[in-house]
Image (cartoon, rainbow, N blue to C red; front, top):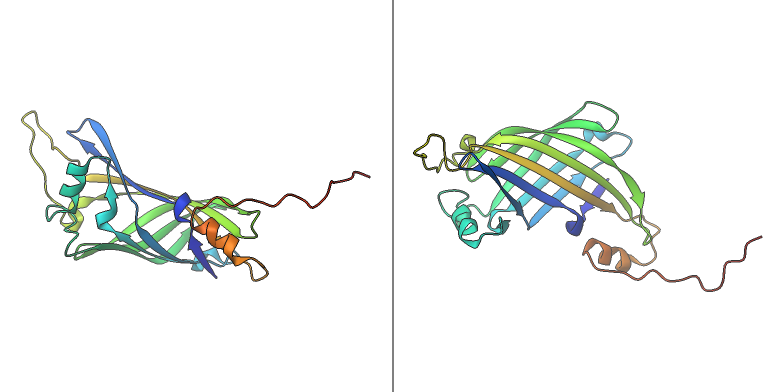
Length: 204
């Protein structure tokens, strides 16, 4: 059962330490996710995410340009990082560990994301929506992202450990939706006006 990412309600964020002091937060703004899920059999779910490395945004153009450079993502040569799941390990009624392979540049390493199912809902436009949150931590040097500067006081300019947080909403369009254009607008993040009832509601 295929589900489509709602990009206006999905965030792929990361956090690193700067000079062992403050946190630098960023996100990737261009991505495509193939998500297959049977709600009755979540243990056989499959995820494949393609993330455009050039879409990195830390709200600092100079830093973003450095992240796209050969010191880090080398975006010109490796425009995408890819995560492909290998198995799901259920840990609770609404939690699981999602095992998979993460490829950054030309290095592929296994990672495990802690996933929480946030629930499901049906929208006013006839779409079924489900939400998840996933977190993990990686050592960027495992993917040969080793650029750094030693501080005079000890430590490093940029932390090796990177925390990743993903908040995502997926949409499935039921077969009986009569106006797919409305559902498409929802997926695109557009504001859609819900029609008012044709006449007054009379209470018995």
